[in-house]
Image (cartoon, rainbow, N blue to C red; front, side, top):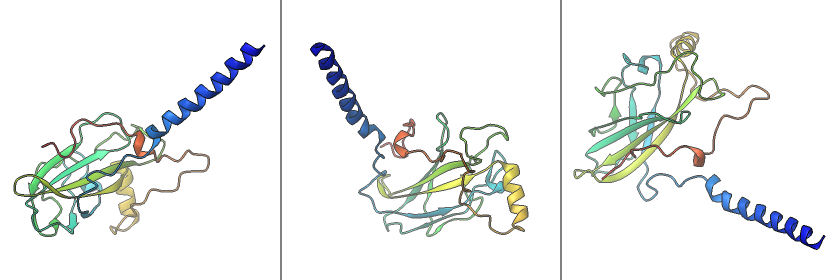
Length: 196
């Protein structure tokens, strides 16, 4: 009987050690480029900015260092596991870019019935990395974008009378699990926004 109790105690200790070892995996990762100054980035995806015929959204950038020569943009759907994020680099302008200014823009595009998450929307991370004349990072900023299917976006825009559509996600229906995932669980995508 003494041996059985010793084995039970060992199993309890092993479970506690395994739980402690798993804690770092659940922690949120550090923000990208923690030592760089932060850019204030603002943009919004509408039905005009989606799929193959979409035009790039207007992008506002503030607090850029004087040494900024170009911006690297990266847009990633955080609700899918495998994808090829859109990324481009363009010469810097003082306050950002008007709608349609990015020639190689690839807008979000997904089928009406294709679901990656329980929520009725997708969350995209839009990152901006300011680079100097030698392509070294000098500042970084990001924002999150809520994107729905084109038909839903058009309906919302019509309902708003052509005015601004709220960008915050709706409250999940009662009984639905909160779709926001700990960023520590996001997959590590190949090809970071900065590769020297």
